Image 1 (cartoon, rainbow, N blue to C red):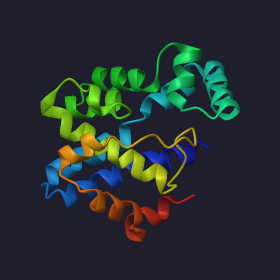
Image 2: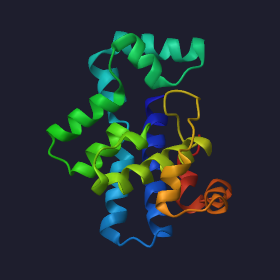
Image 3: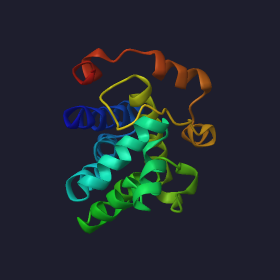
Length: 178
């Protein structure tokens, strides 16, 4: 499962790059999207490593109740991987858009920094895309909603999002498929 988790994380990074390409972003911005996507769920690894017994309880709750991982984390740990990941990334002095993406990708409408909203929105979409397409394993099988307001803010129409969901990216995603 850990390899599949990293495949999922890498797929979100690649999805971020692809979305950035569709948005006409420069290579620096696409690199930020890739990094933010790859690191967005690092809090899960931290929880698994340092609170392993509790993390196992989280995974059991996810499996037994078919609930999103962040809900099980909140119930068992009273904190989520999003909070832990953002704290770690911030302590590493990574750029704020990467930190904010880890903190808010599940709930992009709550991101407080307008300047970083675009990166959060891209990682939100990239996460849904990678999970929907089945690349790796994020820790649960719950596919969260796609926040349409945030996708609209990126400038994607419904048909463009559907194209992203339907399109096969064998050259980029093929190696991540489980």
